[in-house]
Image (cartoon, rainbow, N blue to C red; front, side, top):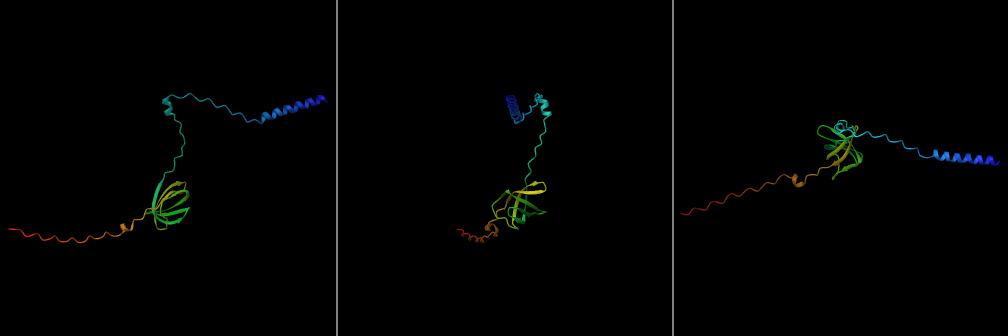
Length: 151
């Protein structure tokens, strides 16, 4: 019986050690050796091409507001065409109130087939003084007659 007990303890100990070895994180594979630096002339010629996604180009469109839903979309009718822009939380709203029929300038980026507004500005209205026609100047008074000459 004593022999059986010693064998059981030995088996349990081996299983415990084997389990702890298997539970460890797998070893990281060794990094491949880096090739020696090429000569300067070859480095320029064999420059690896990195695929960088170019940032979308910001474009502008001006016209009269044909439709507007705050925080969702704006439809602007220009000279030649009408365009619809999506409004996001990142869209910067300039001073002034956006209202149908009013003039606006929309800065936007293309996102696939959608136009995403980046900024909406309302041009400042001209002051009332600038709208009034220029006042007429009063007629000039005729020059006073010349004094008689002395003899």
